[in-house]
Structure formats: C-alpha cells, structure tokens
Length: 98
Length: 463
View 1 (cartoon, helix red, strand yellow):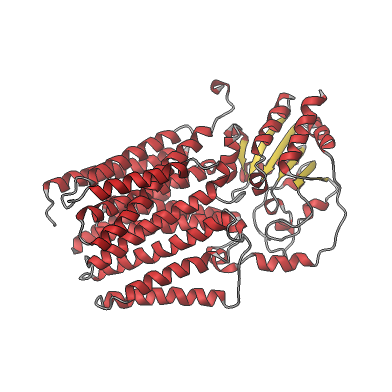
View 2 (cartoon, rainbow over the protein chains, first blue to last red):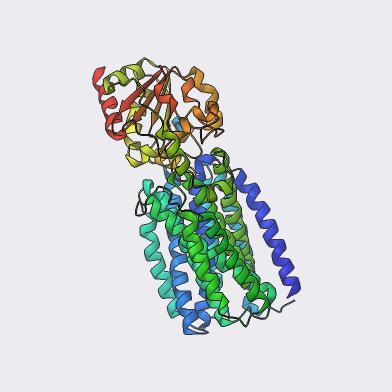
C-alpha cells in the first residue's frame, strides 16, 4: 500500500507540472473554451461512480452513485458539446477562410 | 505490488492512453487552429475511459449504470446548447455538478468503509469531500449570482471573515479527528455539512466583477477534489485529470487576480464593493459632453483607426451582433477596427472573445491588453461599449482609488474617447470614472444595442 501511495503522489506531481506548462501556453482568446474543456475532462470522475453503482454493495451507495453518474455525464456531454460550439465560432479574417 | 486480474491490466492500459489523450487535448487548445483536434482527443479519451471502466470485473449490475448515463446525457445536451451570454453561469453550474459527483462518491466510499483502515485513505477522503462540498455550494451560489437569481452585489455582515475561518477550522479539525479515530463516524456528516455551508458563505460576499477570479478558483478546487478522489480510489487517470484541471484553474485565477491587482485572499475575504460605494458617495455632479448617434457616426467615419472596448454591459445588452454590423460598416469604409480585450472584461476568463466570435468577428481582430495598450496614442477613436472599471484612469493616477494599481486599457490616450453608457451612475464596483469628464470624451447615453444600431443606420444611410 505504501508504494502505491508514493506512486500516486509522483503521478499527481508530474501531472500538475505538465498541466502548468501546457496551459500557460493557451491563448487568452480561448480561456472560456479551455475552462469548459477542463470541466468536461474533469468529469472523468464518472468512472469512480460507475464502479460504485456496478458493484452494488449497498442501496445507499447505489443511490448516491446513480446521482453522481448523472451529474458527471451531463458535464461530459454538455462540456464537449459547448466547447465545440464555441471553437467553431472562432474564425480569422484571412482571405482563405471566406 | 498488488496483483491485477486480467481485465484489470487492460483497463489500466486504456486509462494510460486516455491520460495521454487528455494531455494532448489541452496542448492543442493553445491555438484556435488546432483547438478542435483537442476536443476530439478529449472525446476519444473519455469514451475509451468510460468503455474501459465497464470492463471492471467487480461490476455485477448494469441496469442503473445505463439509466444514469442516458439520463446524464439527456441533461447534458440542453446544457451544451445554452446561449453564449449564459456561458459563465453554465460553467459555474458544471463546476457544481462535477463537485457533486465527487462528494457523493466520497460519501458512499466512507459508509462502505473502504478507507477506514488507512490513515492516508481517510485523509484524502476528507480532503475529497471538503473540497467537493465547498465547490458544490460555492459554484451554485456563483451560478445563482450570474443568472441574477441571487443579488450580484456582495452580501456582507460583521465578523464575516471570522465566521468563515471558524467554519474552515471546524471542517479541518473534524477531518483530523476522524483520521485519528475512524470509529467516530459522526464526524463525517459534520465535515460534509460544514463544507457545504462554508461554500455558500465563501461566495456570497463576492461581487459580480470578481466572478472571473472566483469561477477560476472554483474550477481549480473542482479539479483538486477529483484528484483527491483519484487518491482514494487509487485511480491514476483521475489523479491526472484532476491535477490538469486543478492547475488550469489555478493559472486562470492567477491571471485574473493579476489583471485586477488583487491577491486571492483579497478576493475571497475582501468584499470589495462595500468600500467603494462609500468612496463614490462624496462625488458631486460634474459636467460631461454627450453626443447623438449621428455625431458619433460622423466622428467614426472621419477616423483611420478605431479601437472598440467591450465589457460586461455589451453582454447584458446582447449588443454583440450590432457591434459586428458596426465593424462591417466601418471596415467597408476603410476604417481599421480592432477590439481591445481586458483579461477580466465580462464575468469569466475569455468571456468577451467568445461573444465577439459568436457574432462572427474574426479572432485576429481581438487584441489583448498588453499588446494594444501601446497603440492607443495613435488611435483616433476609442469606443467603449459597456466597460467601465477596466478603462478607469484612476487606476494609474489616484492612489486613494480602490482600484489603484489595477492594469487598465489606456483608452484615455486615444484622440477621442466615446463611451456608450445607460446613464451617469457609477459602474458595478461603484467607483467614479474620471475618464467621463475629460475634454476628449463624449458620452453616448442609451442602451448599447440601440445606440450601436443607430450608428450603423447612420453609416449605411449616409453615403
């Protein structure tokens, strides 16, 4: 268990640094779609809820898990959908486009 | 090392691929040209991850998973179709949903007792529900304020910071006690309850103009709570996605705070609006010059370079499409029109860019503050539509001003300044704006949409 914990901390540390480096380069133009995209990605928490519901360990856990799946899935679907809609709107004035 | 069952290996490999796709997805967001690949990468990663999870050997019941997935998608579609002006509240709402998911799973894990034998497990579980709980209610409050169900003005009372601090200490103290004495189960609902209350109290004193920072901060908390959930479930994909989201939110909050010359603690514990309201109260009415749409159109036509400064007022008046017509009309007459975007214009990071892009204004005409500020002295007309504090020269000159030191758009250096505004009432933060009393400033009183429409009519009818 001890080594698992340390592994997890390493993963967290590395991912946080990658996140900083990658997101620092995102143009301020796209900050709104960035936020809705990270929101959708963050809804990966749904996998925890899926296992919780599927394992059917107690009615209480299943009920909470079902609500959790609904909440997270709405973020996945809504988040990707609206990010795509936003990005579709960004056009340049360069002649090739129109 | 723990031995994996056969399917478990496959799941871990799928999660590994999904993690790489998530990172690529964010990397491709760095430019509008590649950003849509980013979405595709994110979507593939998500489908893989959910599909892989369904292979989990412990899953014995599918019915409720399917029902919940279908239901969630059903709610997600309308949430993805909201108007662009409603994007800030939609974003706040989705932070709340994400945090709700994390908090519920954490609560279920606690009562299933999976973490009770491990001090570390219990610590991260507590972190998960504290961050999740406060993000859930805090984001709901933010969404309520943005949707104007709740008053946008800061709600303050005496001893507010002390109450918040106490609540936070109670939550943390209960968590520590629970880690040391896992059998004291009563402390768990206390932690959850106190975190939920803390989230509400944390956001009610925050005014609308501070929303960009708060939304970013809540974004960061939502990510960290998901990462904590990853620690609890020993799920590296979740840790990675949570860490990415957490750092993204943190970077955005730092950018937003800098753009307002404020620290996090100041945003969270400052209750900004109060001070300024009293500061503005002493002002007496000073003379201003005003102009009609006809006069404004004539001045714009005579100009070579025009910079338009949009603000939240443009979003409220839904004037972005009229602004596009103005952009077209002026461009057709050979006027160079660009847009100056302050980082905190609007109610969330990048809000103005999305609205103007929605109105089909090319994104290479949207210029960031640092880039365009040097150009104002060569600008013939700066046209301000629904922006106030981000153009207030007192931020540069008046040490007693509450916004002193905040980086602003130097519109007062343009040859002529025109301000479309409903009336002379001070802006959202309640600060008087000396810009309006300058000799070179013309006030265009009226609704942004109607006034811009009036100018467009003049421009297209006149020649």
